[in-house]
Length: 487
Image (cartoon, rainbow, N blue to C red; front, side):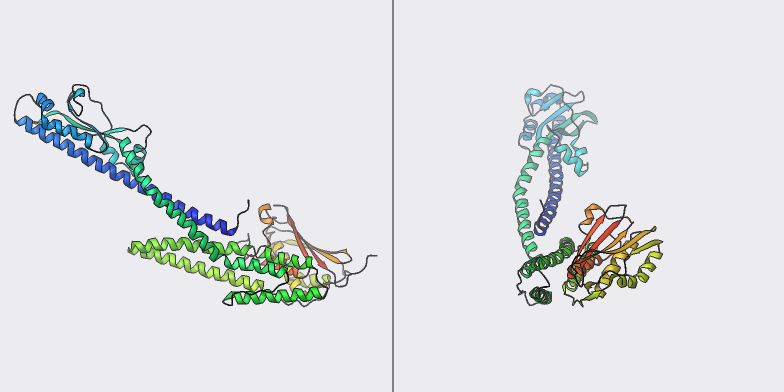
């Protein structure tokens, strides 16, 4: 399904915002994971410090320290705090043999203590590694341990077990809280993109509507500011000329429609050329806002760079619009009989000079007794010269350029430009007459569009056949100046 320019622009802006929201969401998740892990380690350190202080106090009182730790109410209160401490599973006092002397659950005292990876290594790991560990399927228990040294002897350790599954639940809650804000931001981006699309594409919509009205023989009333007034005058001149020619019997309704279709085709590249600078300007405006919010010297430097890019894109947009207005202004055709043999002879010195640069051989097949075509000699000369020069440049390693003219029927002549160059790829074949489309390095994308317009202004037709690697053939049909009856 072919999407309109407006739809593509809305999708592009929404995709940019969605990507930004996704990136910010990941950064937010990484930040929250780091904060939760740090807070958990701090709480665990407070528990181990409290139990260690109570154990040292009991050791100064004398007696069996193992029994005192198991029975002391102060130690018991500290161990039971684990049930009210976020993310903590239990606290245990473990001797050097790995047996639990005291435990948050008294029934587990006397059993062998399990061992778990250190929470400290996870807190000190990279942001991505922390997030991966927290979201490991099934959860993973980590622990914070503090050696218990009494009278310069290693008595054991105090261990606090922490559940990453509980940390993950808090992260999921934080994400759920942030989700409505992200959804509102995406919705706002779609609305803004729709408004921008209507505003930025208004000139193209006016041109399209204008072409439709011209096809019905109507005149235009465009806003009287800036380029619109010039464009409206150009359309009205074209409309008046078509009406005059149709009234004189020189143009049929089908011919008028063909001319308007030709103008629409060559102008289809404008949407692409206008959209690219606008998209670039939008992106750099967002970057500029972020840099201005930063306020640092580096940010100011980057902001100036974004301003330079915006300035360049605005100049490019101005050139595109100016070029189209120049292209759209109707030319006055000086119609007269034009003999093809003489026209080609006039072009040959220039073509031969270009062909000589790369060793291209030129073959001309144009009988001198061909009847003349009705046309503007200057414009036809320029259009045919453009085709011939393009053909020579498509054969940098030499080749053959064939220029042929023949009478097709009592009313038409066919002119052929055939080269043995690199050819045109299938995906580009339908675009070569579009205004501003070019595959040539440094090309303007105007030459073939002008050829296309010139041919159709002469009530003619132009076709192209090409096979990549096997050359290209342009076939042009033009009306004869004095159609003759078939014998």
